[in-house]
Length: 192
Image 1: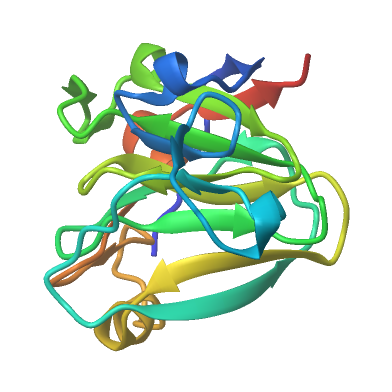
Image 2 (image 1 turned 180 degrees about the horizontal axis):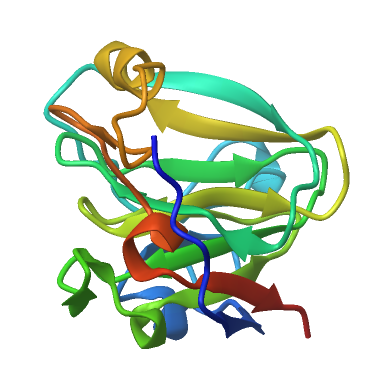
């Protein structure tokens, strides 16, 4: 595998998440601003809210992944065709999600840097991506952050595949592209 030497650094600013700002990429899974559902039992001690749909062509499974802090740089962007993945940090952890719209303008077959957005997802919330939304797995702020995510068996097998000559994976439901190899730049995240 040949590795391209980065010719520059670009920055994407991390911003607070809101339903409106995240709508082009998916759904914010949180109580604030969600539709309250009627519930008549237990004397009002349980409140339920509509969080958003799950969209998949395959049988979904839940995965719990443990993330450790890594460099705040976008190494890969990936998208999925058979599933709209959801990421829900556990234990009140905050994570950063980097995303680009499914129809983002491409340069070097990856979303252009100005199409990338980075959102701070606070503890107590999660995100469900639209299908084909470009993303990097969550960036945790502390080691050992656990994230509950939707997946399916073939996707896990495909993500475990050998990388090609560009350091990428292109299979049935995963299109994972190497940002630095393709664009020749490093994309760093700037925390608020």
